[in-house]
Length: 235
Image (cartoon, rainbow, N blue to C red; front, side, top):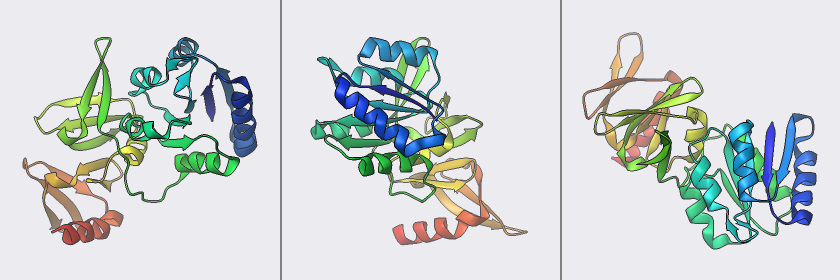
């Protein structure tokens, strides 16, 4: 795992590094530290990372400027901040976790555990997905999504207006971040539940979803029972 820490207080940065090395041990491939927004953005522009550990107050600079620049990138971001009142806004940017300062190693371990956990989760608070288009960042409201299709390390966003956009985050990473109302129905599909018309059962125990726009997408056999129960409970 490749980690970048952006933290302006040397003592705290060293403590975060020490905890991270202890928690990840041989899973850690590379760890770097910078103490300001400019160096952080420069590093992220030139080096691949898996996880960004980000403080929001960096020598008077706003860490949200980093989030705004990297929100469309494929890595996870964990915010480490004393400003708990900013947690909701941070989650709207799509961060994986918000760890309030002061924190101990156990709390940081919980944040890292979210990266590898395969358990179903209650949903995040992500309100927008950011796309890089023509050198600018375009924000797409999650309410405008019909479904998301996996495309290798990328995803295809299928919108209610019929448009399609390519996003840098994988289906697995988006599954952690999307708000309630989205359901993983197949290894390659996440669907907005309000766009489902009905479940269809075809010959050979083949399950499919008919969407309200008449599109049909597959349902994984292992996910059929869970999806049926969810739709039944919500009806």
